[in-house]
Length: 391
Image 1 (spheres, rainbow, N blue to C red):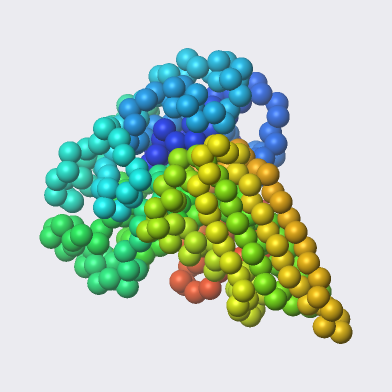
Image 2 (tube, rainbow, N blue to C red):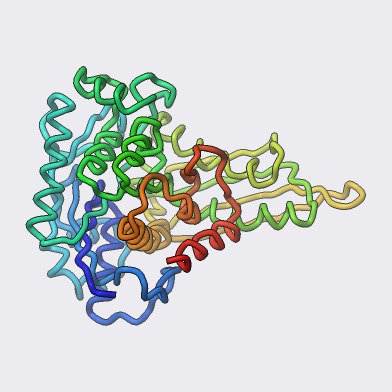
C-alpha cells in the first residue's frame, strides 16, 4: 500500500485516551516493537500507524506533553522519549456548552455565538488542518467528555432538513457533539464517535452521511467491563445457563469518572452499558445493575467488578465473580487507532453511512438499517474480518 498521511482530528485531544494514542504512535515511529493491545497490527492492507497525523480540539490549552504528564497513564520514561513531538501539538479552541456537560470546564473555547458560526469555525479548522499538513484525508474522532443526552425523538434530529432549520434557529436541542459530527460530515471527513454522546447515530446526520457517502461509526467504545460481558454472555446462552442477575460496578478517578459524577452525563453512559446484556441473551435480566462511581485515588486505573448469578440444571444456582483491574486509556487508545485506520479504508473503498462491521469496537453499534445490533464479540470479530478480506 502506498503510504498516505491521514489526519486525525480529535474532539478532546488533551484527554487521557487521546494523549495515550498520540504517544503510542510517536513511540511506534521510534521503532517500538511491542504491539500488544492493537488487534489489527498484522493488517498490512490498512494505513500504517506511523502515517497518522494528530490535531484537534480541547477545553484545556496545554500541549500534549503536559497533558499526558497530568493524566499519568504513559510511563514517564516513555513520555520523555516523545516529549518533543507531543509538545509541538496544542489543541485548537473547542466548541462547548456547559449546559450539556456540567463537570467539564476550560478556557480554550470558541466564543459562544450562533450555531451556524460554530459549525463554520469547526469546518475551517478541518480545512486548515488538511491543507496545512498536506493530508490525504482527515478522520474526526469524538473522545470528548460524555454529554447529557437530548431526547433522540426531538423533531430537530428527525431529518436533515429539520436539523438544518434547527441550526438556523439555534435550536437548544443541538449539542456540541452534534455540531462536531455535522461539521465533519459536511467536510467529507469519516467520523467515529467513541463516546456515549449523540453523534452521527441520529436520523438527521445518518441521512447526511448516507447522502454524501461519508463513513460513520459509533458509539461508546467497548473496552473493559462491557468487553468481558460480550464474551461471557454468549457462553452462558450457548450452554443454556440462565442469568438470574448481573451486578456490575466500576470505580475510576480520571477525568471521565469526574464527568460521569454528574447524573445527566452518567445517564448517557449507563444507557449504552446496560442495553448489551438483554440483547445477547434474548431475554430481559430483571436484576441487571450497573454502577459507575468516581473515586479520585484510582486515577486511570479503573476497577470493574461483576457478580453474576446463574441457574443451571435442576434449578441449581451458581455464581461467577470477575474483578478486572484495568487501565481505562490503555484499553481504549489502541482501539481508537484501529478505528481511524478502518474508517479511512472504508472511505478509500467509497463506502458511506454506518459502518456496521465496526460494531466490534462499540457498546452501542450503529447498524445500516437502524435495527438491533449484534453484540457478541466473536460474531462481531467475524463480521469485521469478512469485511477486511472482501477488498
